[in-house]
Image (tube, rainbow, N blue to C red; front, side, top):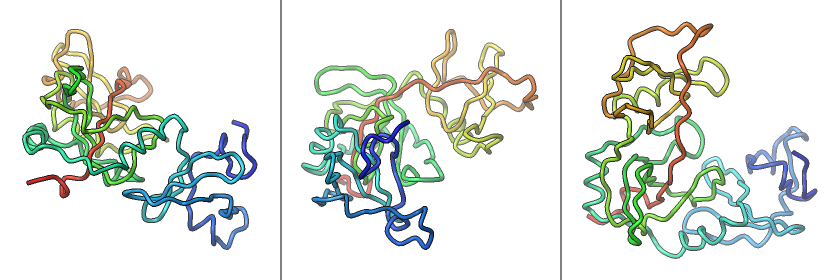
Length: 246
């Protein structure tokens, strides 16, 4: 992808290590961070913009990482920043009963507490592929469909959520090649599949996701089972559990 802004790199760069950019001994790792101006404190992290193109960027984490923010995501960030998003205790109890999918071991998501569920919104919308994500950082990631947890009216188990044992196994799967950490699962009809990585949901014809189990079979990767792409979910972002009302 070609770089659209010569100052901040928007169009070709999505994130970078802030401290390396400022002070790395290697010239190829350094960047002119003075192009990021008008810093604004958010509830967590800081929001900047490029001095040349106005592209918003979000600085967060330890070590701090600068992340591009899609312009169409700014309105959601402003709503998220307006006030804490606290789940009702009844919602918390439901999520605890469902069980959290263990977090990613790397990157910003390693601090997230994410639980697959079915959500009914205050407007009456029913979403069976929903994830409540308790996180400190702003919902900036463009590859996720985010909504605010303040929209939640009810939380129930999702008919498509994988059993907790399968979700735990998928979070611990070892990488066999770059970006592919398979977990082999058995379907109740005798079929088997390979999950691509950490997974929470399965939508498969004639299959109840609750009946899926971790397979004891060994895969021959020269002739592997079908690889399953998890369906897209809607992520309802809330503040971390320790901030929730008791």
